[in-house]
Amino acid sequence: MSTDLGTSEGATGRELVHFVTQRTRFALVNNILQHPEQLPSMYELERLNPSVSDATVYKHVQKLIDAGVVEEVALPDDERRQGYPWKFYGLTDDGRRFLDDHNLLEAEETLQRIYETISDKPEKMVKYENAPRPDRD
Image (tube, rainbow, N blue to C red; front, side):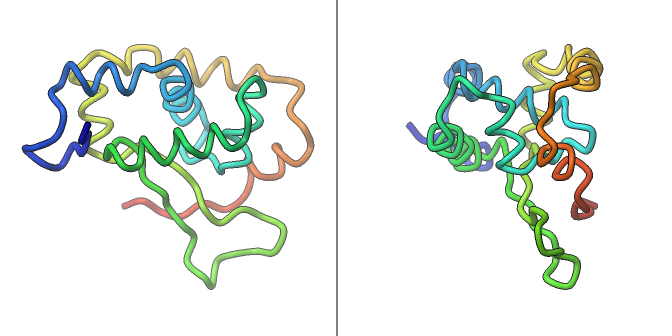
């Protein structure tokens, strides 16, 4: 099934809603929405989904990228710092519009408040959470 949001040959809205709301993919979309910058690194996504293998998290992020819902955003070479992530994942403009059109963004503020209450983040996750992120303008 082609799920590219940018083509007329893509999946129907209903198929894409089903695709995006698959349990793991929807959890990843929610993780992106709840992140303070809405640009978590792969490590952060993996830590936020401890019951899912790292390989599965990666696979589902790739599927969301292929569908046009999520994009990989990289820091420019001159802004990268050793020991910090430089690739991040955020919603595309089309992905955000799609989620909004299908009322899948209703809990965005609640998700962000929940994220703020997570008190047992590993030190590396806190470090990564505070890493520089690329501008998306």
